[in-house]
Image 1 (cartoon, rainbow, N blue to C red):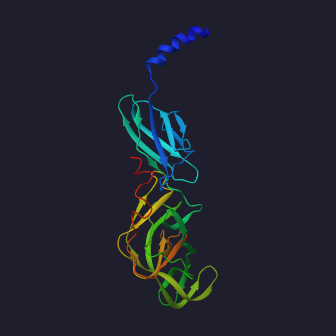
Image 2: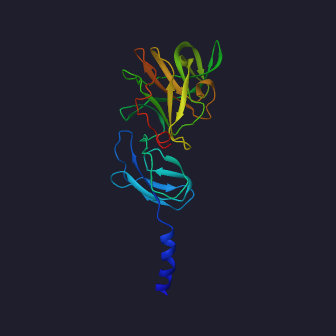
Length: 262
């Protein structure tokens, strides 16, 4: 029976050649990433990158979506349109290394520096009613050139950047009824564009600042400084000592898991 089965399968295997997609996966610095799980969306085809970051995976003709996953990195997605069975050399895929914790970071030279996080509280001001602000500002100063600002594991929508101002007045903190004489409040809104690095998961988002920042204290928030604390109750602050150019879009590398995969 074994011989009969073999005879039946041989023509089938010979008629359906093994067609594969081959490619490479690297980090932002171009270093090969071994151990990346590669799969074809909607099928059982799977592979793992070797020590050189290379993979080879079987596919069927038609729209093909490759998914890439490695702990500590953004997931990757590569869409291909393959109309016939053939050997395909895919575009190299680049995965971003992720910071260890949820938060907002400066990103420069492939390194993350966390911005200071502080809870936004509600206060009653003697002259202006209810306000939302911070009593303390963490001292995180930007480098000589403003790096990329990256948000990890935070809401993909409604990220805001504002300049802060220190107000001296009579405030009462609602929760503890504590009197406060100085408070950091949102002042001027700064235009930013949010770019999702890893669609559709959005675990890493880059905030692009459109024009230079003047010296001062700035906060990234999701509405907390305007009274909406349901998305993220904290603000992430940094200071600019000298005038800084807008974020350099090339500081972290032009490629990302989405752009590089297309």
